[in-house]
Image (cartoon, rainbow, N blue to C red):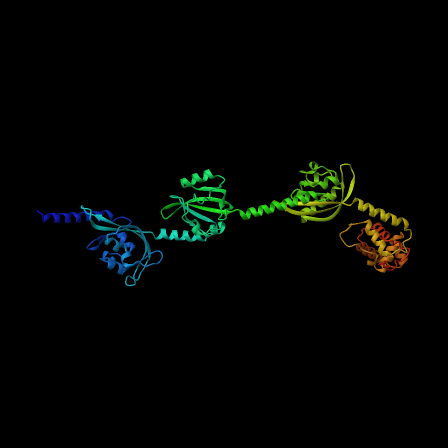
Length: 509
């Protein structure tokens, strides 16, 4: 009777083991059963496949056989010693979980070696008395998972955007990249392991309540302005956002940042530049307008505009150039507008402008395109030359009053007086009498005396075509279009045809 009891226990144990094998045979995880005396006694198909073998014997019948066939390395590339192999640890009675190693065949094993990253868990199956009856080694292929984590780690470390990762279970920082360390001037040891309460990246967030509620619930934290406290006690303006992620099996929050300091410096510099421009614009003693390039709508005028032209800012701001009441000649206004639209600028164009009291001012207008807050604008400067022009005209009149005979007067001075009468009349250099040939001067002189083409032909004894050709060349050289224009041009220069123009006499130095 006593002899039969141990046999019955052994039989029951075999039945239980067969039932266990039946249950776990089809599991996706690899399962290896290890007997304290007999070693490796069974493995399911998943376990064989993870070791790249097809039969149980290929795993080895003992821990020593297993070590001879398979090489295990930690992820730091350190090879496991004999007492560190999961099989050896189980047989020594040690239970463990989450041992992650890289598995490969040893040089004495098969030539084909597909290295994999495996996660081992080991525990004992107790008998009725609580003693270990056998051991179970559970194996999971985590190659893809570990590869993904490695890729994430490399990407996270290399990403220039500042970032830090907080574990949600205890709100402690577990990762920080170089971008964040450079932005905030901390070392890695300053932050890893610290609590989010000690170093609060949401301390001054514009929507702190929303951000903290999202952090507690593991939800996305939308972008918002905040500050990061620096080691010296100062703060740095940032835009922060949070994205929930998992690292391993731990839920975390990935905080990313945009450093606002460069933009703030740029905005401050731009604001100071605009303030300087505004002060200069307001205090400039010359009438100045600022308008849009598109449509030339007036945005602002300075104080000198009101002083010189007599219009209040409210009378002109908001109106287009065409709507301003200042233009004496609409054609001149259209010419200015077309020049600005074509080239974006113009220089010292003479126009006449009207004040509210119907006083006509002679002015020079210059304009240049400028960019203000990313909008193209036109800065127009108006120079009042009324008094200067009146003084020039009075000087010319006085000289002409005392000059009845110009035969003794330097031809150079006569031509300069002609230029004073017509300032800026042409963009081309003014022609002079010296630009004409002796024959052309002779023909011009006869034209000034009132002779017709036929009379000039008779006077000079040349053909009709020859006279016409001389007159055409004279028109081109002095930039006129008819006989009257040529006569006026000659008389403005003291040339009447009654005497030949003498050589230019240099004036006194």
